[in-house]
Structures are given as structure tokens and as C-alpha cells.
Length: 304
Image 1 (cartoon, rainbow, N blue to C red):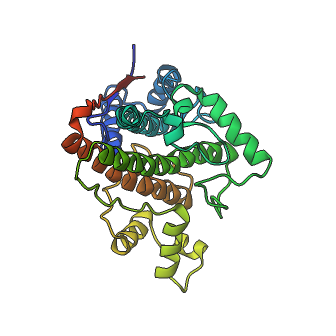
Image 2: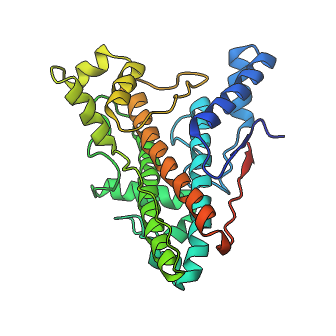
């Protein structure tokens, strides 16, 4: 019997809402298992990663150790990534039929790794992790990842998981931009006068970090981390960005080892948030202007 059930409530679900949902389920489970040690033992024995549907996480999330609440958080992130990928796929397929081209001719592969968009649908998570780990070992610069992920934190097992997540998050922007280009061609072919809206430009992890350094020019990065909380730094960012930030969900247990690790995780969530806004813009546009192509956007649920 599964311990948790998590559903995407829309084709582009809100990550923070999903995390709030799993937090409520954890709290409910804690009420029936009040002893903390028993609760952790229960989670470790019952929670299994549904690797048959996920690309972003492996059956053993972190090689060498267990952190069950953190692993549950990774499952939530992976479900969001999977739902977004399905939605992207369901936009491009009807558009590609109009153009008559193969999807992988319209959507670029992941840079450096050269993994095609359609390959991601059936790719085993272990194969993706092996490709990323091999590139890291060979000191190949990977896309969408800062040259130095953390300045004051080291955990190789966790860093690999974070880097895979960042690659998939960053690649999402390439896919969205390509879908927009394809949609413009389809509008021209069908002689539809609608104009695609301008999409937001997602910031990079390094750009978000630079903004904070500019806002606090007298402090080193270490001093920034020592003198401000994550909430304080996110509030500063919010005032400097051209869009409103989401309300970030606090985990059931704070599994972050230090403030830098949590802040970088929030940075990646900000990037994903902007991409979600752009993806929703495209979904709304094709439904309003190209509905004759038969778009359908199913949502998914998982139990684990």
C-alpha cells in the first residue's frame, strides 16, 4: 500500500502548492506515528521512488546515504518536471503535424550531452545520471549549471542530483523558446493573424547570485550567507526582479545542511517558476488561437 498520493492539479502545476500538499500528508502521518524515530523508520521502509515514470531521480536518490524527507522532496520536484515535459510534448506534437517535420528537428537536444527531446520521454534515469557524472569526471563544462555550484558546501552525492535537476530545468527554457518559434510558423502557414505574447527571460543561477552581490557590495558571499537568512535574501531579490516571486513552501523538516544549499535550491525554483509562467502563456495561447489542432493537456498522479 502506498504512503502518499500526489497529483498535478493543472498541466503546469505550481511547485510550491505540490510541496504544501506533501507537507500536509507528512503532518497527517506524523499525527498517527507520534514517535519521530518510528516515523522515519516507517518512511524509509514504505516510500519507494517510482523510477518507472521518473527521469529526474533514481531508485537510490543519493548514493551512499539516506535522507528520507529530502528524498520525498526530490520526488515532488521530479513529478513537477515530468508534468511540464508531458505538457511541452502535448503542445509540440499537434504543431509538428502542421509543419510535417520530426519533433527532434524542431526541438534542440540538451547541449553537450546531446540527448534528444524525444529520448527524454523514455530515457532511464540511471542513463542520464551516468552521462552527467561522466561529463563531470572528464571536467566537461555542462549547460545551465554555475561553474562553481557551491562556494562553502561540499556533498558530491547531493551535488550530482542538484546538477541533473538544474540541467533539466535549464533545458526547459530551450524547449519553450523552440515551441514558440514553431507556433509562429504554424500561425503563418494557417494564415492566422494572432500574435504570440512576449515571454519572460528566466534568470540564471549566477545572475540571481550576482544581484545579491550588487545589492550588498560591501560583503563577500560568505558574509552575505552569515548575516542574512534565506527569507531575507529572497525578499531582496523580489524587489530587484521584474516579476513577483512565489511564496516558497517550508519543508516538513529542514533538511538543508546550510544556508547556501537552501538558497541555491530556491534559485533553481525561481528559474523554474519563470519557465512555468512562460509555459502557461503558450498553453493558453494555443488553446485560444489554435484549438482546431486538437490540443489536449492531461494531468498525472503518482502514489509512492
